[in-house]
Image 1 (cartoon, rainbow, N blue to C red):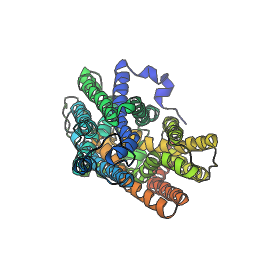
Image 2 (cartoon, one colour):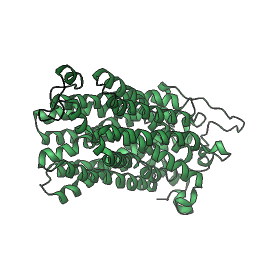
Image 3 (cartoon, rainbow, N blue to C red):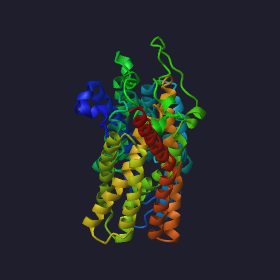
Image 4 (cartoon, rainbow, N blue to C red):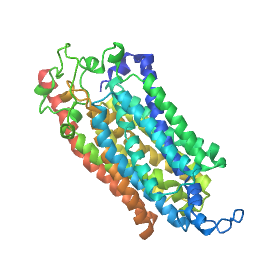
Amino acid sequence: MAWPSIFQRGTLLSQFSHHHVVVFLLTFFSYSLLHASRKTFSNVKVSISKQWTPSAFNTSIELPVEIWSSNHLFPSAEEATLFLGTLDTIFLFSYAVGLFISGIIGDRLNLRWVLSFGMCSSALVVFVFGTLTEWLHFYNKGLYCSLWIVNGLLQSTGWPCVVAVMGNWFGKAGRGVVFGLWSACASVGNILGACLASSVLQYGYEYAFLVTAAVQFAGGIIIFFGLLVSPEEIGLPGIEAEENFEEDSHRPLISGAENEDEAEPNYSIQEDKTITQVKAISFYQACCLPGVIAYSLAYACLKLVNYSFFFWLPFYLSNNFGWKEAEADKLSIWYDVGGIIGGTLQGFISDVLQKRAPVLALSLLLAIGSLVGYSRSPNDKSINALLMAVTGFFIGGPSNMISSAISADLGRQELIQGSSEALATVTGIVDGTGSIGAAVGQYLVSLIQDNLGWMWVFYFFILMTSCTIVFISPLIVREMCYLMQRRQTRMLSG
């Protein structure tokens, strides 16, 4: 087994310039800020629910019934909580639809403009939703729903754009470990959002939205003036030029060639260096690319499980074990820690093996066992945290790989090297399909838990994880057949 060239020539970092480091950090923190605003909303739900409902024990302020009724949306905390859950579902569905649209837009406009516009506009919507309405004491369910639909559409510009920019700068060699580490941006954003919200929540939930929106808006301005979309912007060679001199190590995943003879020649469509303008592929063409539909369906099942842990894990710990909410929130971080380590390590292994699908399949098989083990965790915080980290390793790791490194692989395959503007579109398709699965999953999890209990929720997670393996199994067979074909060819030629 030959190691990828990037590991043979030297350390990974020595292959990158300071421009690569800047692009890595800017895209990392830009998406972290987008995720931070989502986490802020989750962290202040209790405060929002109290503000939207009357308190029978609040005798400090006496108001007429008319004014009292106009300042509160719901007669009980249960109805307020239900509406907050509805906002989550609305956001996820609008976010999913927006991903398909944002991917197409990102491949046709400047990625820096699209990303900066999305960040700044989303910050303004968050400010109006959480801060301005509270300052004006204006509470309206229709307004909240409309703002959160718009916020989902605007936030959807983030992931396709940052993955496309990273795909422009970081080539196939070492992509697994680089993207595995970089995909921790969502988990870092969750932690950042929790810290920002908790630091000012004592002054009112509106200030949590204010601080998050201000930081995100500032980040959007920095992106507009500081992000380099591709190496060509500063006269450096693009990664396609470098990859043309290296063996296509992921050909069975992303190649449309039927045999070795078709696959071995220089497969770059764009050989004329005078061609400077490329045309973005259509949405239908992106869907027809090898592996896109299979990985999109697999990610729909896997993101359902991953996001269910994100939304429900603190509640599960409090509800099932009777632990305090603050303790449950802190303990749930271990799932993110496991996902960060899993995405980085599994990405590295896939780089060394030069194959993605078998690594994913093995991790998901072990994920089934980890889900069984975690569902039977005893009422012990240390053991629960350990099992949680292991579960995050085997579920969060593959989820990070599909949404980042594999999406970049799919959008950078040889069939479209003459039309490189496919990264954002492909990423939008994969992540958009995954977000639809996640949106549906949140409703199903609550329905199963209410009627059957938590154990059946874990059975549902095991089923979805198994479906993920089924969807990627044709890609595994294809890779194995390709390896056998290459081995036979080398034996005959030798």
